[in-house]
Length: 143
Image 1 (cartoon, helix red, strand yellow):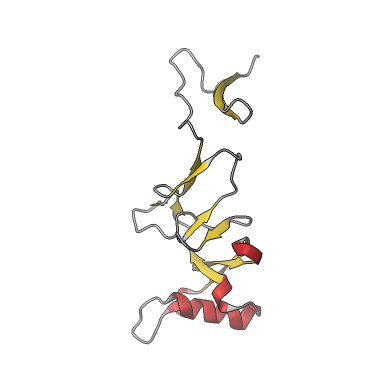
Image 2 (tube, one colour):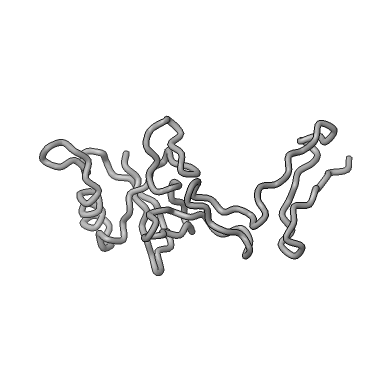
């Protein structure tokens, strides 16, 4: 099945639908996104340019099965379509975070969270972003 994101106002993903791979094949048997867009327009009464193909197997600009990633991430409801970079962006987690075109993800302005030490139990501890202090803070569950 081929997956397509239905775009609403300002490129926001409002649903994701599938159509058969056969609906995408041109006369030469080659997959053509525009054929899927036309199919979805006919059957869903939504303009073809507002259907963008997305890959179920693409996350963080990596194809889970080793293939070629498509558009950064599998589109989800609420994701934002970035037409200039051809990436589906998840919701921005914090106002200060920045986009990375390399992995199609949001990152803190100071980098990734520190790794837990050998003494810290990953089942009980984790780093969480504090937007006010602009820092990673260790959170530990006390049992």
